[in-house]
Length: 258
Ligand code: ADP
Image (cartoon, rainbow, N blue to C red; front, side, top):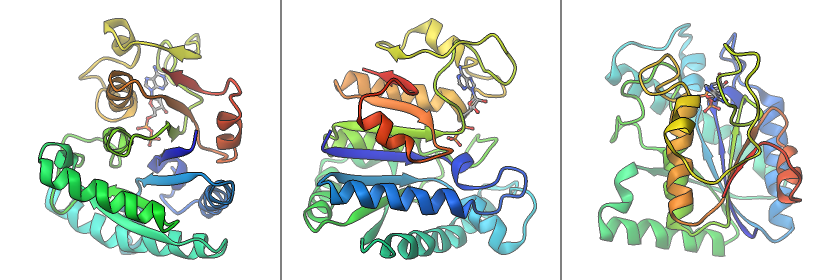
C-alpha cells in the first residue's frame, strides 16, 4: 500500500475518564506516520477529537446539549488539536495541513475536483493532510450523536476520492466482533469481512440501540463504501499506533474488509 488514509477516533486520542489528551498516543501516531513518510508512503490523517479537546480547553465536564454549542466547542478544539499535531509532526521534520471538509464534497463535481486537486498537491509537496469534518458548516456528525464526533464515513469518502490503497481505522476495540464485546463476552472477532449484509449490521447492535449511532454502525457504513469501490479497510485497535506497521506487513491484526 502506497497511499494510506488513517482515521483515528476520539477514544484513541483522549483519556475516556477525564477527556484529557492522551499525549503519548498522539506522539506515537506522529512518529509512525512520519516514519511511513520516510518510507515513501503517502499519508492522510482523518482525526476526530475537536469537541473533546475544546471541552478540555473550556473546562467543560460534559458535552454541550445543543448543536450550536457543540459547533462552538469544536471550533475551539480544532485549533488546539491542529496545534498539537503541528508540534508533534514538526518534531520529525514533517509538515501538516488542515483540511476541513463536509461529507457532500462528492456530490458537487466542482467541489469534488477542488478537494481532489488540493489533496494531490499536498501529497506532491510531501505534506500530511489532517482532515476533519467542518463542524461549523455541516452538523451531520454532531447531530444524533451520543458520543464525540465520528469521522468514519468521511474517512471512507476521502479514501474513495484520492483512490487510497488502504483505509486504516483505529478505534478502542481490536476489530469487528459478532456482537458488542462490552455487553457480550462470547463475541468473536471477525478476521475478514467481504460483504456488509443484514446479519453483519445486526452484530453492530443494529440501528437505534445505544451503539446504533456512531460506534460500529458508522464504521460499517464506511466499510460498505470501501467495498463498493473495491478498496480495502482494516479496523484495528489504536491503543498503540505501532499496530499500523503490523497491518502494513499483512499480519492478521484487526478486521480486514475487502
Ligand atoms: P471511535 O471513537 O474509535 O470512533 P466508538 O466508541 O465510536 O469508537 O466505537 C467503538 C465501540 O463500538 C467499541 O468500543 C464497542 O463498544 C462498540 N461496538 C458495538 N458493536 C460492536 C461490535 N460488533 N464489534 C466491536 N465493537 C462494537
